[in-house]
Length: 145
Image 1 (spheres, rainbow, N blue to C red):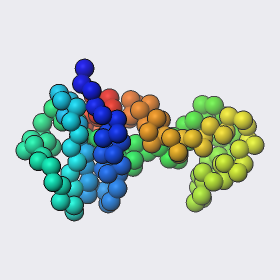
Image 2 (image 1 turned 30 degrees about the horizontal axis):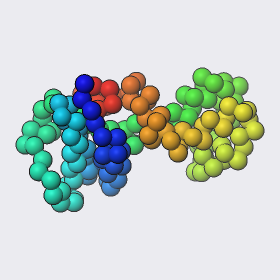
Image 3 (image 1 turned 30 degrees about the vertical axis):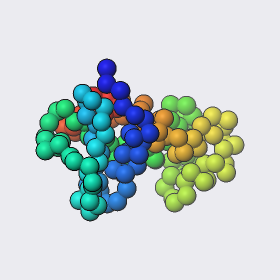
């Protein structure tokens, strides 16, 4: 079993999620647990393996956008846990500021308040559950190889 430093993994995930799509990347060496970051805009001081992007040894970390932890996850949760409120929640997510609205109107149900932590902790804790089910096409995922 390979051990990966969680702080390095989260930092690399945040880095890969910053910037424009495909500008930054993060990879985990499946044999050593070492985390590598890449960027087309920022010079990275550490040496990057030549086969980083082509070898099965290195797992590319998904970005926040690839995990799709926003609207889709909230609507899946609502459909499963609050089917009677689905139309209301879907309506909220059609406009900007959806999470603030959900938090302010958590009176839909006590369970609706569970939508709020999806945004704050979902990128860390909830991500693992989502990654197990969603994997970018043609790529292995570091959280679920």
